[in-house]
Image (tube, rainbow, N blue to C red; front, side, top):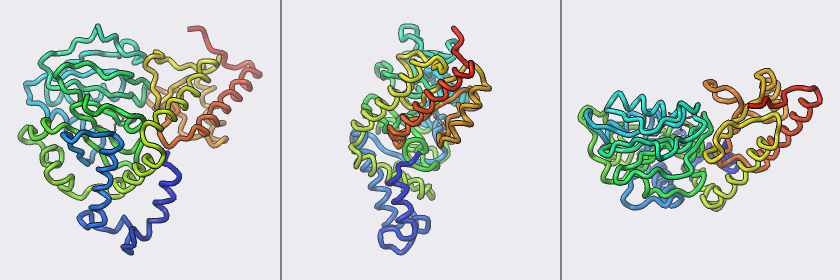
Length: 358
Ligand code: PMP
């Protein structure tokens, strides 16, 4: 979901950017108008996330998925071991991809719990010589997230923040590298942002494609080739909107209220169940299911009729999922919980779907 004021501005500026007489879709990425957009996007991101001076911000392509490969290509050699915390579908994919390039030690595996909890830290088996410790802060499909920063000593932490970035303040200095595609909390798909500490740049192994080499990308000002200009432009507008709305402290307050509202509704219900250990429930992607797939289909159909969209769980896990990204207003969540309560009342009247005892 995009913020309404951003969509309005995109519409207003579409024919004429900044009095140039041209659309953002027509200007050169090397011209001064785009240069201003690119510079402002970086400085607004630095401001909002309080990025320290010894970190570079790289604007890349290929999504978070390409970072699953770019990270080992830049930070390892083939004989090196890296630690991965596998807590859901995305961190599992990241570990599988990294294994093409180096030795992967799965230091914690939530698989046996069905990714319903994060394994107790006392059971982790990190490798003290690991080049980095990788994890996904929030698992978008499984609806589980880390409420803490893993302790890794001197080993740099690599964090996939695709679905939590800018949802609340973070301590960038606790990480060696953070990456995210912009398409969840920022703008249209196309742009991938990497925030990386200086000392981790410049070590790409030979044979790394230039577009994946953090050193080359950094030296070129993220302009080795034509960047996804529209995605970059809209990302810049969303960052301006975030600043105007009060920044990440305000986002944290709003997002906490939104997820509380929804989890309270689920927990008070006899029809909906969330299976994630409450300590690790995602603030962003709230997963729930019902006792029968047939009831879920009815729920989705009726929700769509009520204007409530995108509630189907990821195809790999089924069930239902509500994603509460920054642009989703509290009123949107209220509309959803009102609908859920009403649906539950109607299902109960028909004698359908009381929760099976687990
Ligand atoms: N990691 C996480 C946590 C994600 O949510 C996603 C996308 N849903 C990805 C990685 C893959 O991102 P992309 O589509 O940008 O490659």
